[in-house]
Image 1 (cartoon, rainbow, N blue to C red):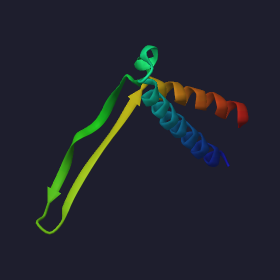
Image 2 (image 1 turned 60 degrees about the horizontal axis):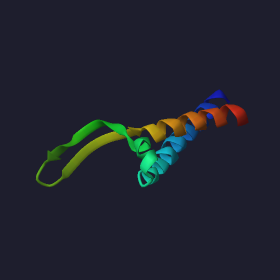
Image 3 (image 1 turned 90 degrees about the vertical axis):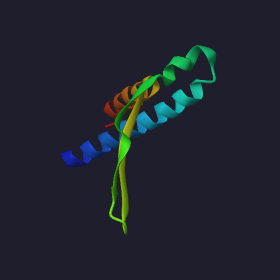
Image 4 (image 1 turned 180 degrees about the vertical axis):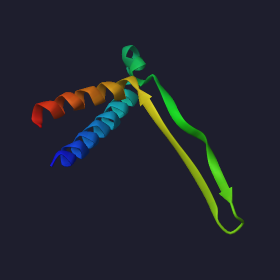
Length: 84
């Protein structure tokens, strides 16, 4: 039963990150809230390419964290603790 709550917690945190990042992108249009969209991208920025002449594979992964996304994760964690 504990594993079920771990998956729910992870999904709640990811949804908080996504919603927070989206709101941060919207906040760039407001002059005094532009700083919410400031962040850093981590990952493989240049994709790894495997070309075997009959199959072309391209691998890439990156995660972008913004201040609004981190705030969204914190709020989601607090809400998770309150309701679960």
